[in-house]
Amino acid sequence: MIKLGVLLAALLIASPALADRYSDCNNVGKRNITIAGCSAIILNTAESLEAKIKAYVKRGNAYLMGDDNDLAIADFDSALVLAPGLPVALYRRGKAKLKKNLDDEAIADFDAVIQTNPFHAFAKYMRGRAKEKKGDKAGAKKDINDALGLNPDIKAAKKDKERLDKE
Image (tube, rainbow, N blue to C red; front, side):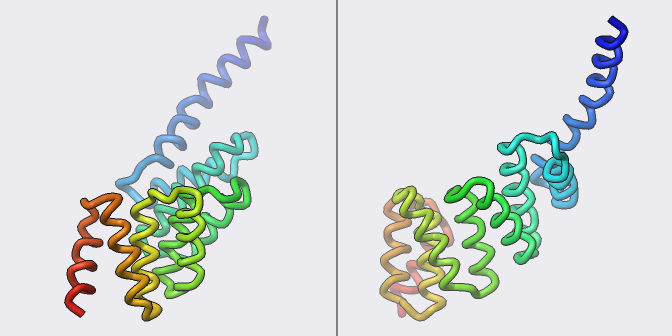
């Protein structure tokens, strides 16, 4: 009976810490808090595989938003080791690679997302941007038009389409 009481007390004490790291990892407004919370989940050996995958993706997003592209790519790579072919990790890694001017690698990531989900408008749009950077205007126009056909509300795609149509 005493052991059960000690166990319950330990759980009650640990619960706020668990809740804090999960809420911190989900904090999209404060990058440093997100990174710290997700790092705590990643480093905790007792965390589930699913929790670690989500934490790598969320921390990678936080790095991506701060233009820490190498760290973002490393986290998306880690998520992909744990969950090969995970579309969200491939898509976000593609965005980070595009920011680093690794256009061929970005296109490969967007291709993989589109192969999994041919209706992923944002992957098509980003692939179009990568193709344009490589000088493939026709490929860029096609991807951007396809993206707008799937989701006509992508404002950046509308602007890029207008600009490409004028060239």
